[in-house]
Image (cartoon, rainbow, N blue to C red):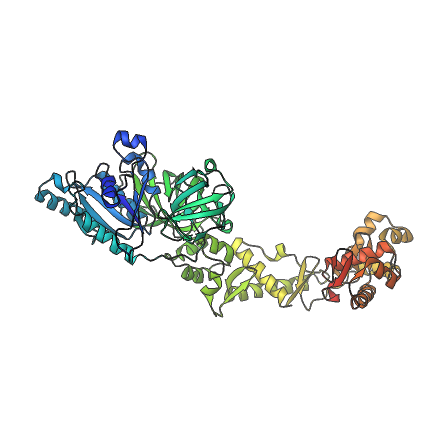
Length: 626
C-alpha cells in the first residue's frame, strides 16, 4: 500500500514520515537549505505487522508553487494522510490538497493533527472542529483525526496502527489489465543501467517483459523489478515500483512519460472529461479557457472546449473537451486535475469519458448520445449501451479503456442481439436495417441499369462515419453469406446477371475464336489481326471480365473461362502426385513457358495455388480463378 501525505507547507509531513519510518525524505540540497519539500520524497516501512503489506510513503510538497510536483505523487488507489499543524490550523494548501485528492479519486485516508506539543488542548479541540468542517462532504468526512507530536512521539503509534490496518485491507485490482506506470523519476544505477520509478496504475510488469515508452514509442525490456524498495517478481497495481530497463538511457526518459505495452500506446491531444469546478473557484469558465492539465505524473497546457453546458463552480460535473498542446496518455476512467493558467490555483477536475478526436462535429447529437452512454468505471455496461448507437471497434475500445483484448467477447456473452464482424461489435437490429437498405439500393440499381455489373463499396456505404461503418460491415456480412457477390470491386445481388451491352457482345464475337485455346494469343496479336489501335482495344477488352465472358490473367492475356478451368484441372492432376514446377506444368499442357508463368501467377493471386520456392501446391478451389 502507498500512503500519500498532503497538507500545507511546514505542517510537518516530512517529520511525520521520519517518525514512522526513520527516513528523511528531503534529499535535495535545496530542500535542506530552505527547510521545505520541493520534490517528491519516498520512504518505506513494514510497520511491524506481518499481516500488513510493506507500506510506501510519498511525501509531497506543501508549497503552492510546487503543486505540479504534488499531483505527480498521487494515484487513486493510494491511502491519504492529510496533515494539519494545530498551531496554524486549516490553511490554503490544506484545502487545495484535499480538493486535489478528491478530484483524483482517493477514497481512503486519515487526518493527522500535528504539532500538538506546541498548543494547549483547547486549541487542538478547536482545530478538530475546523477539520470537521473542512472534510464535510469529502471522502475524509468520517476519517479519524489523530493528534500527534513528532517531537514527543505522542500519537505516532496510533497513526501506525491505522495505516497497518488499512494495509491489511488493501487488495490489488486491475492485475489482468495491460500494464501502466506513470514515470516520476528516471536515473542511472551503476552496474544496472536505467531505472524508472512510479506508482503502478494497472497490470503487472515482470522481468523480460517488452514494453514501450509512451512519449516516443521506444521499445524497452524489463531487466528487473523492485517494489516498495525490495526485489520482487512483479510490480502490480498500487505498488511503488522501480523498473530497471534495457534499451534506453536515463537521459531519454522524463517525468510525465509512461511505461506500457506497445498495443496500449495512443498519444492524444483531445480528451473529453466530466469537469467539476470547485465551489470556491472565483471565475466563470468560458470556451477556450486556458488551463494546466495534471494527469498522474504528466503535465500539459490545454484549452477547455465547451460542449452543450457551461460548468459553474460547485454545480456538479458537465462534459467538456480538452485540447492539449502536447499529447497525453489518458484512458477512460482516469482522473485529471485542472489548474487555472492565470490564477495559479486549482479550477477543478474530473473523470475521462472519451479519448481521441471526436468523429464529426463535437456537439453532434450522435456524439452526445455516445458520451452519455459512458458509465463510470464500467466498461461492460458502456460497451453494451454503445453498440446500440454505433458500431464498436473492439481493439480501439479495449485500448482506450485499458482492457485486455479478450475482455470484449465476455461483455456480450451469448447475447443474440449483438453481432461481431471484422473486429467490430454492432447491434443485430442495426445490421438488419443496414442490410435491408443495401439490398433495396442494389435492387433499384439493377432495375434501372440492367447492364451494370453493380455498385462499388464507396457508392453503397455513404453517410457519416458511423453510418458508413455500419453499411460497410453489413456489406461484408451480405458477401460472406452469399447474399451479394463482388466482382472487380462491384457489388451485386447474388441472383443478378447483368445484361451484356451490345457493344460488348460485338467485341466478344470478334475475339471469342482466337481466345478459344489453352494458349490464346496476346492482346497485341489479336489487335493486329483485327486491325485495331492497341490502346483503345486494350481498354475495351476490360469489359469482358465484368460479364464473365473472359478472364484477364495478365496485362496482355485473356482466357475463356472454360479453357482456364482446363488448365486448372491439369494443375490439379500434377499436384495429386506432389508439388510441381513451371517446367512440369509446361510439359503437361504443351503451352509456352511465358504463358505458363502468366497462368500460374494468376492461380497464385486468386488463391488456387501457393508457390514455395520453385514449386507449387493446390490450396484453394478451382472456381477461385474465374
